[in-house]
Image: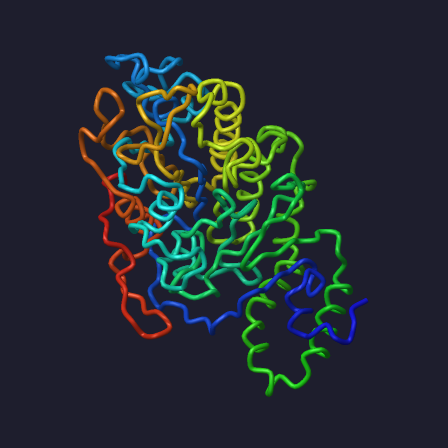
Amino acid sequence: MFSLNFSRRDFLRSSIGLTGLTIPTFLQAKARSSIAGSGKAKSCIVIYCWGGIGHQETFDPKPDAPNKDARGEFGAIPTATDGIQFGELIPNLAKHSNKLAIVRSVHHNAGAHSGGIYYSLTGKAPTGGKAKDRTNWPSLTAMISRFQDQTKGAPPALRLPYNMYDNGGLMPGQFGGWLGSEYDPILIPTPAGKPFGGVSRTTGRELALKVSMKEDRIMNRLELLKKLEGDKNTQSEYQLLDQFRQTATNMLLDSSISDAYDLDKEDPRIRGMYGDHIGGQGLLLARRLIEAGVPVVQVCAGAGDLAGGAGDNWDTHRDHFPKMKKRLLPVFDQTVSALLTDLDMRGMLDETLVIMLTDFGRTPKVNGNGGRDHHPAVYSLFFAGGGIQGGQVYGASDNKADRPKENACTPGDIHATVYKAMGIDHRAELHDKFGRPFIICDGDPLPLF
């Protein structure tokens, strides 16, 4: 029970307002673009490796590097594509090289996590603004959703399974920025996931889906909300909640979305292929949500809790090689390979763009704690599906994986490539709520098609 002193605003912001829905910000009226996508990809899965995944141990091994640190402790293995080698700890992904376009020459100049995440997710240099600052550039996930016609009942963009933090601070670049709060991708956890040791650290547009909640209970709560609000004509701030509330209601009532969220309905063999960990659940859930009509899903991919500087994250300043061998890369190899296999088997890969992003790479030099430090000067990522030609490598680093050697490219170029795959004009002009014009991307698409 709540007291009479508990305001309508407090109720709406609380976890009992609508099955775990929290709404600390109000949504502006939605103004969708008239620009229609014409690319091959109809949906997108953004795999984000929080912390900065080591390129030397994954997609840009240097077995012939002039010094031991650059070579590292692991070797290189052949892939399914002649002339392309991966690190020995991702043998399953090596079998999928014919589906992957590897980019080995991405670089920027932001050496801290906050700047690296912002650069990678927005394609723009960091500005130092706070995480929810509406002058920030929109995330890639938010921008893609701005141009998509969503299936009825499906939200335009989702993130899972948690926000990205560093040293207790919420990282900028994850939200809708100047597009407005209605384009903040909605955060949902994996059904069985308990990030941060079971302590929820969520903010913004979040929805804790209750797959067991009956329709009559949901509708009863909505009716209660209406009674508490009173006359809508005099409650303008509550009118701004309608769009998000409707999206949340659709997600809870629409059978395709609620069924997608219920991983118990997945074929046990497929679920086992992804693995019993947050990383596996996250990518499986992403596939199910895309299949249910969500245009874009962003997943923090890894073995477990990758956020907040604790747990199984890619920020390997200490014990880099044991962490990569024993936990991080086996899970990454399993889950990403499972996703590619699953999408391909279902005939979804041609129309689903998969892009792996990360803060930055890791240093060629190993520090005194056996770790590799932050290295934005060059790093690797990959594309798959959505009209991208697999079995190719774009760009190259030098013989120590220290700097770009050929075809250096920026996060802006990566974003432009995503937009091209999604049929979005990367030079399209959008306006913020003040009518100010913005060109959505200043990069150029890479020749990967």
